[in-house]
Length: 198
Image (cartoon, rainbow, N blue to C red; front, side):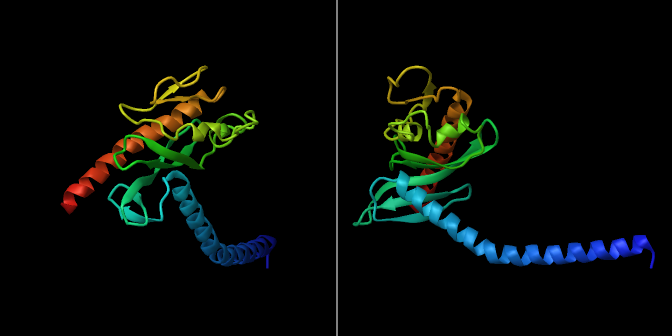
C-alpha cells in the first residue's frame, strides 16, 4: 500500500471515530442543554411578570406569549421574548408588560454578545457597585406609549425614558429599539388573538 493510500485510510478512521464520539456526546448533552434552557426560560418569565401563581402559554403565529395569572385565574401580565440586533450580534430579552401593554413590569437579557466591559453592562454594570443591575431594573414601571426613549448623561425625567449606559450608548439604544419593536408586535398579536376568541 502506498504512503498516500495509508494516509487516506488513517485519516478516514480518525474522522469516523471522531464523528462517532461527537455524535454520542451530543446525544448525551442535548437533553441536558434543553432542560437548562427550559429552567432559564421559566426563571426569566417569573422575573419579569408581576406577582403570579402560574402562567399559560399562548402560541401565536409570530411568537409565544406567556400570560401570568393570579390564584383566581385572572391575568396579571404578559411576558414574551424580544430579539434584535445589538452592537455585535443578536440580543434576546424577556420582556414583561401589564395586560394593557402600557407599562413594563420588567426585562431580563437572556442572550447577548456585546463588547465585554461595555455593552455587556446591559446585564450587569460592575462600575455601579451599589446596584450592578441598575440598567435592566430601570425598565420596571417605564411607560410604553408613545414609545420608550433613551437619554444620556442625566436621570430620566419622563415616564417613557431610560438612561443609557456610559460608554455603551449603542447597546443601550439597541435594547430599547428591540423592546419597542417587540412591544408593537406582541400587542397587535395579542389583540388579534382576543378578537378571534370573541
